[in-house]
Length: 307
Ligand code: SF4
Picture 1 (cartoon, protein in one colour):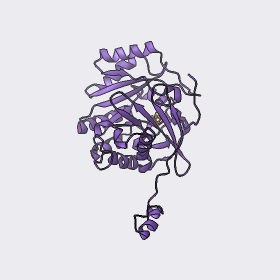
Picture 2 (picture 1 turned 45 degrees about the horizontal axis):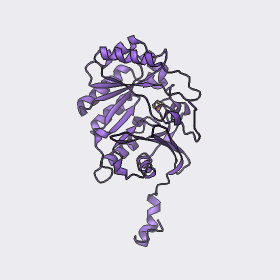
Picture 3 (picture 1 turned 180 degrees about the vertical axis):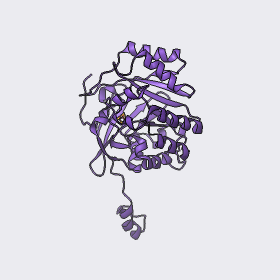
Picture 4 (picture 1 turned 120 degrees about the horizontal axis):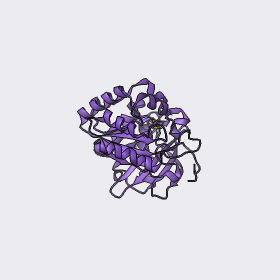
């Protein structure tokens, strides 16, 4: 602040009490062979956050985190295994976009897509996440379209309804991962708090309010959730909802207690969904070689796996 000599001295002296200049320092960048880059940042208190830059032919996307670690504890996710550190503040969530743009040599407004799919559960850090989203949307800040912001949740009905009522218009992605409560509890230990029926009611309410197609994320785990009858059950619970299913092949990380489904099994599952009239895409993750893919973020400084 002391160097801002164009400001009156008294203002310069008063500013540090209420404002902090971002101390978002890059620890390490992990460039993947596929062009994506994972960034590990350190925060003002020494905690760390990860963001991933994903360049596509038609858009530049950043995947950002909203918590240090995650309280949801999904069994297939390296972040979940870390446990929960703390919520990121609104500025720390927003800063990830600015920092990634900076390190990519881009202006922040060249980032046109943001996915809240990094570390943490956005709806358990609601105030700070929506603070950041409002600045992404603000035409004097990042001026993004709400269609270009996707919030991914493990399914907190109250949070989904609140997001609908707040009318931010962002896209919703639901990490469902199973078509029945018993299987889901094995994958997401905290899933016992809400049934799939309760979550789907809230998701339908979100669609009714926003008219935005909902994305259903489904990580394919061998022998757990990948049978064809489970695909038919999934189609049944999605009936009447405008939704698109993303089947995500499991991305391996060290010490993972689950294994991924094979390619053939994934294709059979996808075909069963298609036969039932459900739009589906198999999403091969990017950045797998540098631990930047879905479920792999774990704040490691060195290359996590040789695949
Ligand atoms: S998949 Fe998402 S919600 Fe589940 S533990 Fe990982 S970061 Fe948390």
